Length: 243
Length: 243
DNA sequence: ACAGTAGGATTGTCCGACAATAGGGCGATG
DNA sequence: CATCGCCCTATTGTCGGACAATCCTACTGT
Image 1 (cartoon, rainbow over the protein chains, first blue to last red):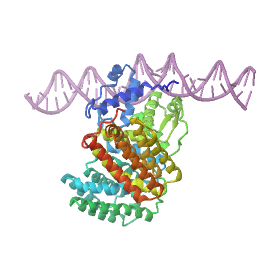
Image 2 (tube, each protein chain N blue to C red):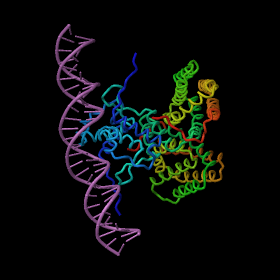
Image 3 (tube, each protein chain N blue to C red):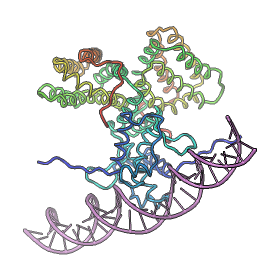
Image 4 (tube, helix red, strand yellow):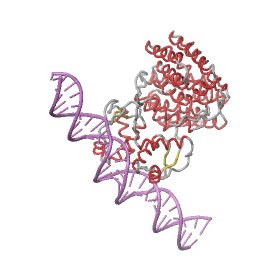
């Protein structure tokens, strides 16, 4: 009996080598990649092959170009880019509002707890700023949603645990459109969110982890009520906003 | 004042359109994609351009080919493929063992809780099978790690919540190599895992959610002890196994 | 109905080419 | 001496064509 033999296309091998070099830090973030021609020469393959490999790195967020720039730079994958893939996957696996909401239920209270224990001054400041933006800012629902997202992001950032930030991100991406629907339909939603954010902010600011977790748990439960009032069926698959 | 204008390369546009068609289910999982030439004709671009777009879909896990086949088939992104991107991102963001372990701490007890509430007969059977494999199976540490991973996966599956499965997956991927080190170094580790799996399995089987969550919490705390005994520094960045 | 085969279609890879434009160096200028 | 603007070159994006390998499919013979 012989073991399976599987040929890998050259573009995948090239990509694998490059990814390896990036993850083992031979190529560090900020470095610029050699030109396509140079890579082709070094790998002994055609430029087209290198380009196909490049697209893989690019869509993994490992390389990117500055806006309006032409040179490819090694870059640490942005949470939002990585999470986009997760969001797509969840949508394609028929994740429902309930599923995502439940994950939030599990994740957010401990995040608030950890944030209260480990936040630094700058974290509190950032949170306060985002909370304030939501209060002052008047009508536009889409901006409100962005600020709510940002509040959660900064709270997770305050835990100084990238795993939590990255776990949370796809949930935010998936819920954002529906949250907008809730804000549009339910008049008191915005006020309730503002109140909740204030309570959580205070608890986190005071380092009262238990309290922060409790308020957050209430906040997330409140989200569910919002869905019910806005007549969004929880067992419905999430329709992801296009792209 | 004019708004920023940013030109997108054709390969990205093509990819975006295809991704859109997949997420909105115009192209359903199982369908085969048109050939590259045909796509090039329809989009009015060159085949090379189509191929570059294809690499993006491929690395996102949206299309794949059956082993040894040549035709591209639309496919739902496998959790493990998607999670690989997340794992890479975490490693590049200098996530430490503590970070990942903490996320496990937050995630696993509620997962066990939900699994106990919603598991079906088949889920229990699958769990029992994996747990049994770990017991019977003798020496090979790498197999043991695989079975531990699989136990967690099946437990998450028993929640019937894809968001939880997908949130958990990168944590497993990142911890697996270190778990192997623990099993290699700490003699009693394997027995403790077997015991813990048995307790959790019983609680889940009996539908005792609280108990399942408690045993799981203990189990995860035990992992940490394993790290300490194996002399793995928790505040050290995780070195991801190559690819 | 089924197996085997031959032709066609598709993919992986290469080569070469060219327009557009960003990068970088050089010279002019204060 | 420092700064600005300009020109040349390198690089990327895209195209067209080509070819070997091999998978797919439809036909044919039993």
